[in-house]
Image (spheres, rainbow, N blue to C red):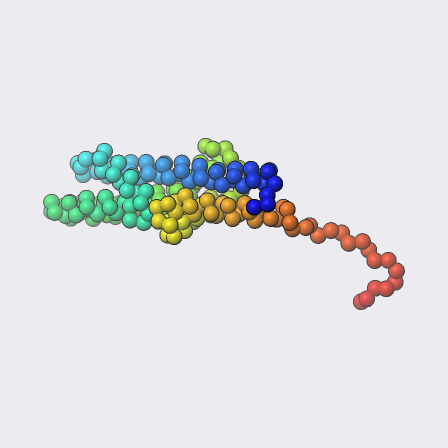
Length: 183
């Protein structure tokens, strides 16, 4: 592509920044989800450490990740005759972990990591990053976690480069002289 060196560096800096934000957010999200599930397992007297780690790792798998852990645990509780425990595990996993941590805390976490931890001023909204992760996951599966935000960041940066380089600002037209004005 016919970019100047400074434009290429700007594109690289923006895309690399987005990837750092996504990586750190994913790691913290995995830890939060695993920790939250581990806490519930302590309440029911199950192996909280192993199940928490499994849940966190499974959370990396798009859409069905956490369910790969909580569904068998719920079924096990049902097998033991603990229907209430099974229902609590299912609701806790769906509402608190899937709804609160993954859908509400994750976008907030993206903003905090972007501005406070990495101290980079990316010109891309946190919600846009979050939705680009979701879009990437739906299109590319697991790898979409990185591919979606990368494509989005690259597209936005290219639009900015285009805007700065090729779109001319409207200039002041000189006043026409003479009495040849049409009305």
